[in-house]
Amino acid sequence: MCKLSKQYGPVFSIQMGTQKMVVLTGYETVKEALVNQADAFAERAFIPIFEEFMKGYGVIFSHGENWRVMRRFALSTLRDYGMGKRTIEDRIVEECGFLIKQFESHEGKPFENTAIMNGAVSNIIVSILLGKRFEYNDSTFIRLLKLVNENIRLAGSPSIQLYNMFPALGFLFGARKTILNNRDELYAFIQATFIESLKELDANDQRNLIDSFLIRQQEEKTQTNGFFHNENLQSLVGNLFAAGTETTSTTLRWGLLLMMKYPEIQSKVQEEIARVIGSAPTTRELISSRCCALIAAKIKTQYEEKPHRILQSTFWTLMENL
Ligand code: HEM
Picture: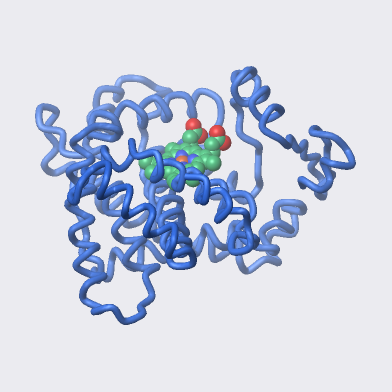
């Protein structure tokens, strides 16, 4: 896309099957659209696989008033349960303890970290959604993570790209069927969980996001066209579970990879932590560290934009100037 923008300018369009896509490239153009003209660009595209998957419910791929109401509820409830506050920091530090124990159990030998990184990160959003944490070897947890990861992988696959271009041919694509089956299994788990929550629901003692949603549902019962129905609950919980797991654990795994690849930078980071913050920094102190912040920003842009280039990138030159 960046190459094409050199030839056609920062705004150009591509015809993908029956849909025309407009591509914006470069910081200034994207900022102009998403920040300066935020209202005009607030809508989500209608992408066939996500329309079929979400049916317009939840937050990530919903539209109009449904999106606004679910987004407002999600933001305020995530804050109520500690997101962006010290309460969630304590939960993260506690989860780090479990994660470090797992790492240590391998006694320095190589191991596959995907599943436990996924589990550790997921447990943070799970604590807000369900008010609990799962053990990393819990078979239900492993299954839920597999469903989400497989769906994220398939959603970007060539077969689903083709389906998005020619949705009428959907029946030909096995990946589409897998995505929908995975969704049904995930939603069945969420449904069973909130039916369980209903048994001990208490407006004066809301334990997690599901409780808060169910309380809103009860308050809304008299309205005919409310938004706090079970379909939105399943989709919202599914959205937050997926969005709060894969993104962050992939970012952290890129971080581990880069630290392994560039041990010199790893030493610099460790040195800075020891010098500026001391031997037992809090997460908040790490976040305010210049070196850590720069690395976090770098990891994010590297993997989102061009992961295949990451190991030959200018990462080292940039870090040299720390
Ligand atoms: C490194 C971590 C993360 C990355 C790279 C990331 C990336 C993104 C991106 C690119 C979007 C689309 C923004 C847009 O189109 O306007 C998005 C939306 C979203 N993310 Fe994340 N995200 C991360 C972590 C999280 C976490 C931890 C949560 C949950 C607690 C989360 C929940 C959401 C939600 C709910 C949306 C949809 C917002 C809306 O449509 O209004 N994300 N994320």
